[in-house]
Length: 395
Image: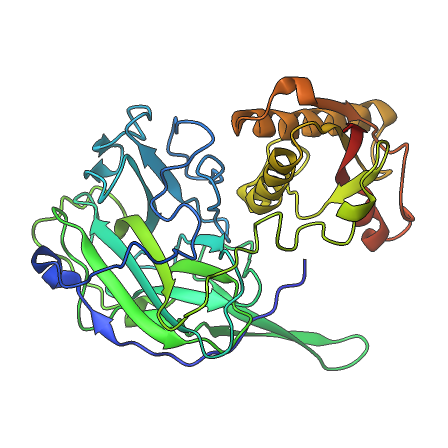
């Protein structure tokens, strides 16, 4: 997937961290939250463990854009991932039963949360972001510069350190260099106001005017360690190596949108609009943006939006029965590819069933590398061949 960084100015208008008890920030809940699952109440399965090298796969719609392992906590979770007491501290949710947690450390290690907005922001949209944080009492210290970054495409890196904007400059046919710079989030908690409260939830909020096209939000600390406003309150136990924050109730709203907000995830608006009129028994369609762990059948949460569109489609066509087909490229043995593709197809069916669809409407099959749609001689072609499709069995 192409990832483009959108340069945007910073518009920090309001900090409400220490004034939370006075309830100074009022969110109009009648307005649409442009973030799915902003309070982390929807999940695939209860969290079981805090894994230093794990991947955030159990909370719907949210994922980590780096190798830094964000965590999920819920009242239904295990002892490590429970609420209010868990492996990394103790805190009741700001609202509901769950919240996430990320390191925003005093050193270079970072963790982030990322999700896709319900729709792309439009030029001139006045956008307000609000989210709540609480410092774990087991932290070694606290930072100030927690922030929200809005981008046109998802930002991603394989590092476990600060998330940087990287541009590749070609110097010659044989030589290129990488230019890495820090991101400039649109909403940033002031460096002069460290987020130190371990008992209560503190609020970070700000507004900005969208340039247009922004569709992803990333939450975390984008400042270098020396510019993060790091402090060490005496009340902390220092059992953890850095500043660890619980995150809850992320709310993104458009303040000047007078017309109803059209949800890009709504199947009636634009999903499969080009092929819906030709629906017929035997027709097959590639599901775009379905991601799995490498060489595994575990569905990554980046797939949430495409899968929920499919859920909406099947609910819009209650008599439709489909087959989910898994396909691989030509690398690996026939038996391995058949097994992997079948397991991935089954994972998709299991996901759909978990969202309330009847098993009687769903079948799955692995085709391995038997049905390529492009050449296996190039990486681009192999990427197209690694796919998940659905085929209409009956309507």
